[in-house]
Amino acid sequence: MRGRVVQTFCIAACLVFTATLQAMDTTYTIREGETLFAVARKAQVPVDVLSAFNGITDASRVKAGMQIRIPGVRTVKKGDTLFGIARELSVPLAGLLELNRLPKSARIKAGDRLFVPMPAGQKAAVAGQPAGTEPTEGMPVSSASGSRQADALVWPHPGRRESVSGKISGLVFFGVKGDPVLSASAGEVKWVAPYWGLGKVVLIKAADGSIFTYWGNEEILVNVGDRVSPGAEIARLGESPQGGGARLYFSIKDAKGQVLDPEKYFSAKSQA
Image (cartoon, rainbow, N blue to C red; front, side, top):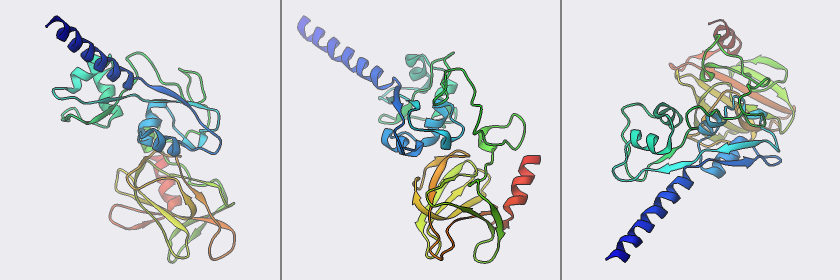
């Protein structure tokens, strides 16, 4: 009988130890040509969770050689509660909810995967920078002083831009094949597909219902359902099938489907 008790205790201890190991974060070094989206897919962590965990505000600034931390995962067991998991892992409940995008009233069930935030008092390091420092460049311009990163806007390409109307109404950016295409806002990828005569297209829906569309891509770096931050690299620019070099077409529609002028939209947001 005593042998069975000891054996049961050892098995239980092993399970607890394994769960603890799984909940620990790990460090990963960015490889040449690798994007944050690629790392997120490899680690099976949503890119917005990976960004938040590392304090990354501009995914395009993540370069080869930088080290980022992959959050640990805690698999929910029968009888678990969010409060109990937070106490077990010595992490703030608010941080657990925020990192996993859960409301206070959220219900969890056995088998759910929860990403583990930093312990209380510990701050994540920005990729490639010492812990406790703030990013000094590549930050998106916020629409208001002190506003959250989700409210920021960045131009999707740094090249010369011109207004365009017709089949696509918005802006056209002139660049070079292979240029990174950045998400202008935070949002969720709703559509990714080739479009005849305009390369590959990415459509992202912002929290306010606005639709941001990016046309003229050769390579897509996101999938439908991905959540992105402002400045995140979502695609690589391609040569226009119609000739004339590499061009990115960028359009915005509001929640009612009305076409907006990107220049006015960005200007209005910056003054809000």
